[in-house]
Length: 143
Image 1 (cartoon, helix red, strand yellow):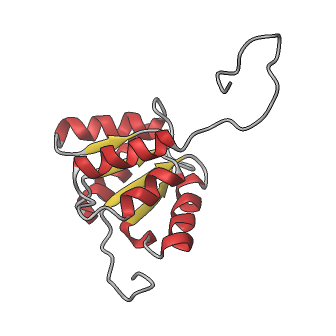
Image 2 (cartoon, rainbow, N blue to C red):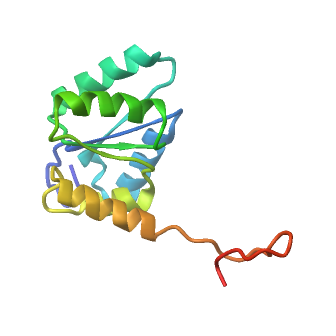
């Protein structure tokens, strides 16, 4: 339920190593009150087959059409790609970050690939490097 009393059905999974998913979903909820749109999962203590099974079960349980993963080539992304072969409508967004998830939870159609792509663009655009000196005389690209 959001701060306004709106019932928020889970629409996407956020998966990652350690407490990444729980932490970032908690931050989304604290900032927006819309954390209920996202379901966090960890791979702590799970092997490859268990990750696939856990993810498959979670996708089916909430009817998720979007999965946000922490690493582009991590175990969750590999599992998500396997499930995506079975469910071509499933969208996988890798390298999830807080700005991407904040954008996603405010999309009117959080189950669409358009919302996922928009969120990915926001997340990518939010990355930046502030300060710091160049090491070895090279350019930092932030000139």
